[in-house]
Image (cartoon, rainbow over all chains, first blue to last red; front, side):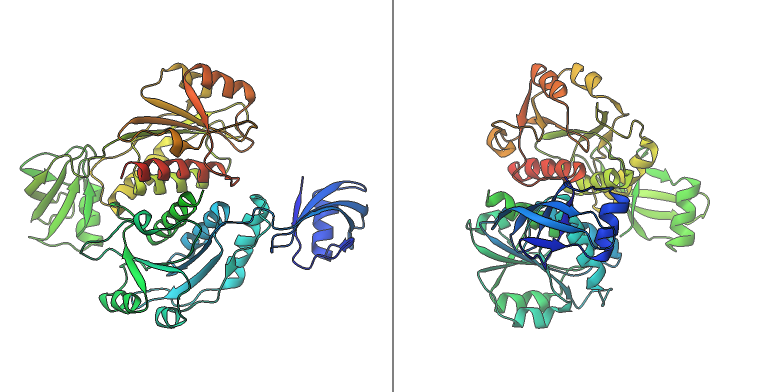
Length: 233
Length: 233
């Protein structure tokens, strides 16, 4: 069944935007009485029936609604340095959305080669991933900010900083208590600087390892996401 | 330090191929006495020094060698239906190589839209990932075969089939014993057929879940890889 993302949902009837109407009727060839699924991005999942298959203004009648669909038992925020090749960050966003994540913040670090991020395009990738994987919650993508600003915002719950510097580092799994609120910092190609690590530690973040393998930025971010989800199953 | 993949390593001197020589001297601008790293794909990692910076025939002298570098404590074989969009499989190969995997076999399933795979290009992606993540073992990429042929090959160690069909399914993590030999089957977009599931079970594979989320083929394959690696840390 086709799924539409409808953050502006109205009940009992909802009118698809002109673009979505065209897509529904001209591309998907949906017809009167066909059923579709709607998700509002804040936990609402709806079944709806087409009551007017107008290609400019398709009208849907909500026949069933469910709140807190797929509600997660924990909160995961990953703050990640945007990759030089933006496609790698896009892959991370798609995969993390499929696996489960609540918030993402691109952080510009001392060694970041990329200093700017267009969040509009990235948000579209997240929306497309929630449609594909039938999620009723839309992960929050924040605007990019500097690493320094990010850690000054204050930390809710447990904070971790994954880095490749020398020294004893526990594995993330050794520190995670289930059903928590977690923030993980993932650095750029070339890692965080020792100054950034020290500043994060002073702000309450604990240095961690994601295993022996040397991982690219987006792989490390996804590994953190996998691990938190797995530890909360 | 730059790393070369040298499956045909010779000691104490090694001559780079014409293509690699050109790359080393013209592109990387390496010079006489510069050090490089070599990995042979079967666990050997070497340090070498340039003794003749010839752009057609660069000669290296091996100064240090190490065997079984980064040897893994388990064996993971993932048999995965190639994705319709081959880039998704390529992404899986890159990420699985970074995280750690021993063998991959593309399997053509009843619902596979893609029936052919060019392994040469895929192998280059794996080679590039081992260079990037400094691995001395090169994962084995087998030629694509049919699902039926694959399960008839016989199963060494524990076999798992990840699927989305109804019924009670344990999580992979509940079944995995550390330091084992594992084979995981991952189906195409649209899942395995009930007949394929039954045939796999008859051949000794256990049906498993990779968690609640509905994952794309390549994400499921990577989730399996991540989970096995995490359980063997």
